[in-house]
Image (cartoon, rainbow, N blue to C red; front, side):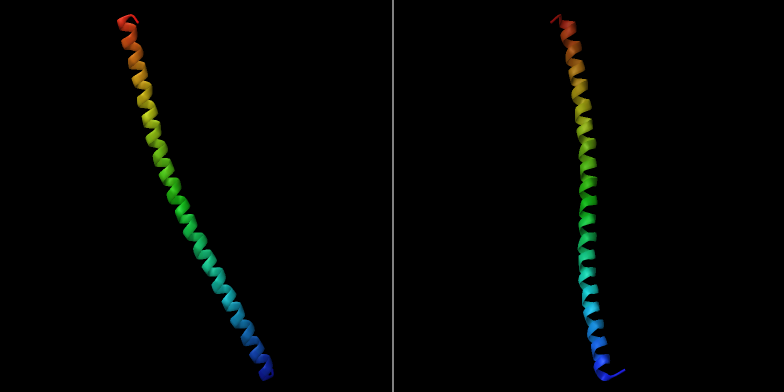
Length: 74
């Protein structure tokens, strides 16, 4: 293998390493985004649980109001 071939191979290796590094950076960004998505999903689930509690409370309030109205004859 000639010196020119060796240098050409080294240039190819360097170019490939640079592509690998760029792809790794993209992968790191994708993983960071996935972590943010998971965090947001957990917050959504927590908020949904809170909303479910509020709705259940509102239903109890309405039922109590209906009972009060029935007792007062209105």
